[in-house]
Length: 230
Ligand SMILES: Nc1ncnc2c1ncn2[C@@H]1O[C@H](COP(=O)(O)OP(=O)(O)OP(=O)(O)O)[C@@H](O)[C@H]1O
Ligand SMILES: [Mg+2]
Image (cartoon, rainbow, N blue to C red; front, side, top):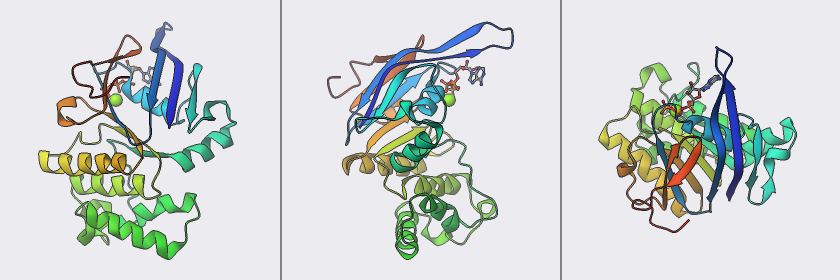
């Protein structure tokens, strides 16, 4: 589903020196597989996810979704590919304050033209699955942090994206809510999505198919933690 080859990305530090954040990253994640990426703060994990999800451009390398060379598309084409293929789960969940929980989730459906009643039914089922069904009419300010994060998760998966990219999806959550989100991500992998989770706690995802560590601009597989051969 996801194939990245030779990704490179450098930022210019304020002093002018180039910081090589991605220095030849290769990553393949097949449909139905769960990959975990760990690494020190500042090692480039968020940069990698943003590049993989076509939110940021790489300086070099290529990205394919389902075999399609999406990193070579025009800006509009990349944006369409992102809408069609990718669900993002961010740590900062970015709910719109003037929309209710349900309306925030439904925002996602605008991008694929799914019929409204169908999208609504699905959004409500998702909110219920994540244990926030009773809160669908609440505005973000009326939700706890963990509830907001679960609503944001529902928004990310509403369109059943075949590729899910999650950046510290449980960063602000207690153990019980972390489990809810991780279980939901896992169940998306079981039903065929390719899932990439960035986390400082790989032990919280004991059934990951692959566990990688980001170091010196590259991904290294943790042989002890991965269940499958790369
Ligand atoms: N726009 C930018 N301009 C310059 N440097 C940047 C920019 N964005 C990120 N960086 C630098 O790139 C490096 C990688 O950042 P990134 O956010 O990918 O790290 P991370 O692994 O996600 O860290 P954390 O675990 O703290 O979230 C950091 O050293 C950061 O300072
Ligand atoms: Mg980060």
